Length: 283
Length: 304
Image (cartoon, rainbow over all chains, first blue to last red):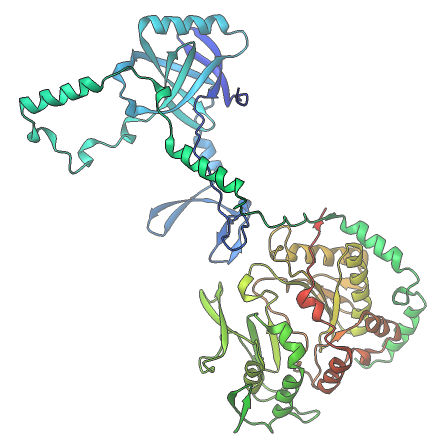
């Protein structure tokens, strides 16, 4: 078993007068092989700095504001409070507005997938909703606010769980008329060619079995990494710098003054001599 | 015009008899000769750093100017480094004095004072040292600075840091804490500026009658300013072994802590003054007391 999933949101599915309390878990864990950036010369991890080219300085997060480029090099600065004022109200509900047939939604509209799991005493209502949707063959279309963003989502039964899929808004899907070289119907094939192609498709048709497909590229990359690691062809991190000791400045000063007590520089007897010297000065 | 060959490079030197320090008759020829003689020690501290020249074409009593851009009439072999300047909204090409020929060329332009950056060209974001410039507000003087310098040394000792002192060659004393670790920057919370400011402000709080941490002239009378503000990517500080444009050819001279103690306890301000000739002899006798400032690797502690 992998690591326990942690919920990223909790709230309730709401439709009509029914409320089903749920928690949200990520349904997909990406398995891309992640590489880090190292300095080729010494193998040190590359750090990113927020660099201001005008000041030639690293900039603290607190000094950063959001700017929207309205025309080249012209920015409107938006304060965090101004954005907060526009934040959609976090209602903590997944408000189902419509039920539609799943096959009416083209997969183009689907974005990220989350599991909905009953939270607290919602088991019975959750199961009821799941079975009713399965029997009706319908998908709930809902709106939900997660963090500060409003999402359009589809809620549907998948085996024994409800899955929530965030959806692209219609105006986010690239319209096909923006694709210049789509041939359209003027390039229609002949009846005979169509038949042959259909036959070919038919001969390859099978049941959808997701386990059948593997990311062979990732497997080869992992294989390479393993071989290199075994062969000791590893770039080791240069010895980490000792973390800076934390000191209390005042305590250090007190300790230094105590240590210096009686030393000539702080000798009380020297003070009068020094004053006398000064009074004779012509400055 | 005198043409000399320095390490195989021909240099035309001009106005060698021109008096730069009228009070003593110290000429430009003597300035060049001083820099030539001190070069083995001085070059260690100038090498690889953008250098600002403080030029006195007609001697210390006349006009001077700071030259950041390495003059375009420089010899082809003169090394430079390009640094973005916020103020000039562009690249400034600084002179880099890495060898004797470059040093003599720079000295010939009556660059009495040499002010290098606290950073090296190849790592401008990270200063190689923290500098504390102790500047006395009259009637305070170098003796008062020496007392403050000793306290700074003791504080740094408590932090496990070695520090090194030099006279400013003018009125004060400077304390350097070498870093050379490429870790601390100038401005961030763990940088040299907040660190030096915190140290200066703590001393001001603890010794309000003797020490100030602010540049404002009105509060400085009789007190020592711990000037922390030179710990800034845009600023430069007078180099160790640089001449100063004062009435006499005084030099910013590295001194041992025993000598600082001696200045403080004797109350003799003259013991903080070294002229060009003294300094060449000192280096022959004592070596480069500031050498660790260029090499010692230390890490700034985080302040609580």
